[in-house]
Amino acid sequence: MTPRLILLIVAALLLAGPAAAGPRTVAVTFDDLPYQGEGRRLCDRDQALALTGEFLTMLVPLDAHATAFVNEGKVCEAGRDEILPAILDLWLDAGVALGNHTFSHINIHQTTAEAWLDDVDRGAEVTRSVLAARGQILHWFRHPYLFTGETAEKHDAMAAGLATRGYDVAPVTIDNNDWMFAALYRRAEAAGDPALMARIGTAYVAHMTTVLDHWEPYSAELTGGREPAQVLLLHANSLNRDWYPQIHALYLARGYRFVSLETALADPIYQHADTYVRANGVSWLHRWTFSDGRPIRWEPEPPAWIVEAYEAAN
Image 1 (cartoon, rainbow, N blue to C red):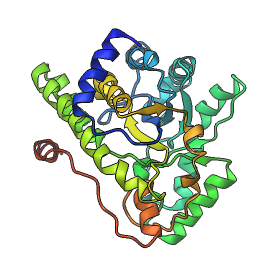
Image 2: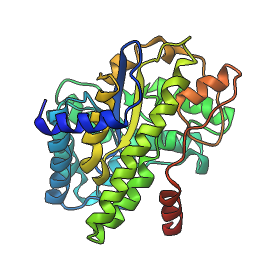
Image 3: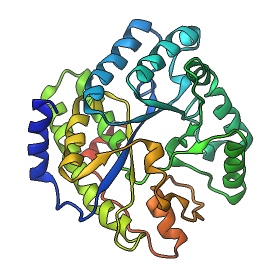
């Protein structure tokens, strides 16, 4: 454990709530590879490798056992066959597992199940070949926006299509709106405003504490008091490049052990019935609560000034 991480854990202990009586585990996942940005497509190989390298330089020492989900369409078509394999190899060299997040981060609410599955297939082309070169298979899948179909017909067609293709769906239990903080952080970064970047980052870490205070007891209600293995949704972006170490320290301070996605999904909770069919993307904890016939208790929103700034800019 590095001296910096020790200092971060000490700081996190000041924010952390009481640790659970039993062991806590979490699988960390990062969506929107190669890199999340507003309309950003990576077209320059050196820039793409630099962004990836910076993120992994942060992540590797933390031993997070992460899984990352790829949108192949985030790389320009002209250079995709050269740039994307080089980027994905860096993630794999860092020990990060890879999954499919569709080609274009497609919104199922705006298309058909057939077109959505076509986008799933297109999103596997490069990733599958990169994994195959290492003797691995592509089997993880993460739904864009956590949308699983707003009608029963779409939901069932999507689920059947994924199963036919051999995918294992990666659920999310801890959702947290990091994308909203990240959008503001990118703008502050582009404006050269480090004070605002620090304010946003500090608010992000505090918000992550608040949402854990909600998710931990809420999840235990599904299992008779035992907190199940959690799956944390984050995104590969400059916010987490700079602030994920503090999030990681926060989890350590609350008694979590970082595990692979495969290990987390071995928890029996992930076999729970899911009858949730709605036009929004929500935590699987909400889906299971709904399926049990109990009222959903929604997680805390980001601070009002973050929400207002985001809405004003969009």
